[in-house]
Length: 405
Image 1 (cartoon, rainbow, N blue to C red):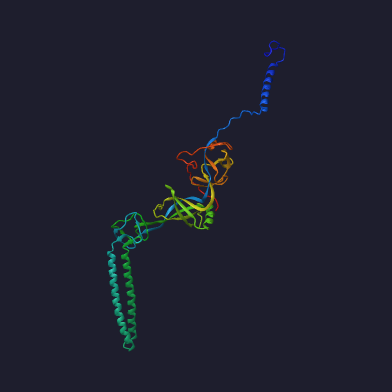
Image 2 (image 1 turned 180 degrees about the vertical axis):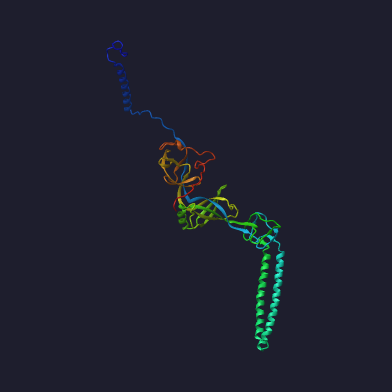
């Protein structure tokens, strides 16, 4: 005998009670569904995802530069090492270390007394030679009158004539000696050959200096000033093409004053690429009346190659990266997020150029992208107080701009 828990009174009867109960349940469910369908009622809706809170900013359109960012070094336009032109003892120093000097300003004085004595001696020697020449000319004039009457020989006449010629040459030499002595006396007063800023003096009062040997001082001209920098040979053709269209603008920024650019112009392109580095040297000239640029100081250089009209820009925080490339979320008029693949260009401070994928005026998500689903609803939030929702923390500008112009 077989146990049958579904029918204990009749164990030999097949187990069909459970089947009947299950069939009844399914039948009831089917009837309810059929009635609901015929009555026009829908099934209860599934769980709806709430809108994602986001911050947005509009895409803007404006003219933007195409540029190369490099690091340059300031170089004085003129550098002069001041040395004496006569040997003597320093008696005066007429400037302060680090002072701004003009061309012709007195800097040092060398003891002039020996050179004054040499000038006096040269003047006396010149007077002596002039007197001798006057006597020779008088005597020659007499012999010239006598030679016609055959009162003197031709030999004596020639001798007197030669004496006059020698006297004239000796007077010229004496005059040259006077001029040399006068110059040496003037050289005792050492003056600035250029306008610029003096360094620290290298001698003190009482030091004996040697002509054309002892260094006294270095003066550097600071206005205008040069900034030397390099670009890679891969960017050389781009620079040359834009140089052919006219002078290129250059912006200089000091590391501690990045928000105060200094305007200049590209004035030099070297004639060869350096073999060791594969770079070519360029030089920009900047007006520097306030001496913000200082020789030897590093400067952030932006070489502006061209200007793109009507470029579309969005905050640099908006683009995100996916397996298919960069994308942004654009908020449509119905409040849903549209995923757009974009092609970005150069950064412009806190903004970045979008070459394709976004139009000016469209709203892009700049914060909260992680909670956004393509086609999903978003809840646009106001930017936090004191912060702009259209900007993100500034990152270093792109090192190279490859856009053609």
